[in-house]
Image 1 (cartoon, rainbow, N blue to C red):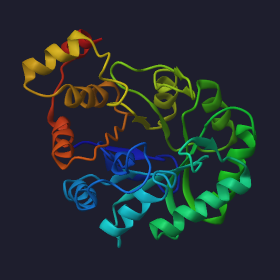
Image 2 (image 1 turned 135 degrees about the vertical axis):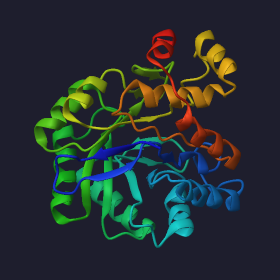
Image 3 (image 1 turned 135 degrees about the horizontal axis):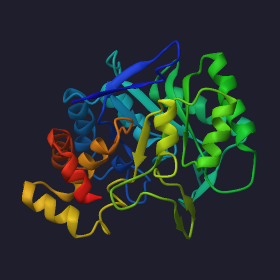
Image 4 (image 1 turned 45 degrees about the vertical axis):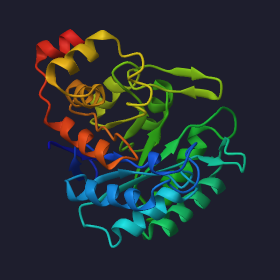
Length: 290
């Protein structure tokens, strides 16, 4: 499995395998509550790390706190090369709706909660997720993140669900280690839904490449596959792989600065996703897929 370096220009860069694991799907229905099969959820985390995955993506509002607690139960004390990345900026209401939680005080509360539930003294990478409109400016929220970085609670700061303009604003405020936006073969640009706006990867990929910032795609399998079209399906049939596997392989070949984190609640699907790193796509294959 190839690798990628995060925060390469900082005093504390780290290199991880270029296929991570997103833990969101380990929760119950609606990204809420305990997993239907808790032993399998724990085994998925253990198997991923044993298979060479050393980048995990989580958030304290998954569950709530469910994925953080699963990670700690399955893997603590953590391997020295394991990077746990979390997100702040959002929260859940009792009715399971999503709300912004992005004032400086909110962000500090979330960071402290993540530190407690993950059993960490410092979180290696934290994304500030833009969720909804209004509230503090990105300058105010990111300022709070960089302050906690100075305090040692955070090692590196990233951005999630950001527009090109928001990323440009963030780059003027301090070092942005990573960007986490929705991205997949068939869903590459901003998606506007009833509950708000989900920013895509295509708008920011060239900026990430220019600045050496890894782009971490989320929802690449959830949103990417239903409208993927005949080309992806046909090539998957020809190769004897699933469309999900080919979608991951496309991301890995699209740019060396992309770090996919496909998630699943199935141990069998985890193993399938990991095998996607073995799929080789030529320049002609990528041109055909478009």
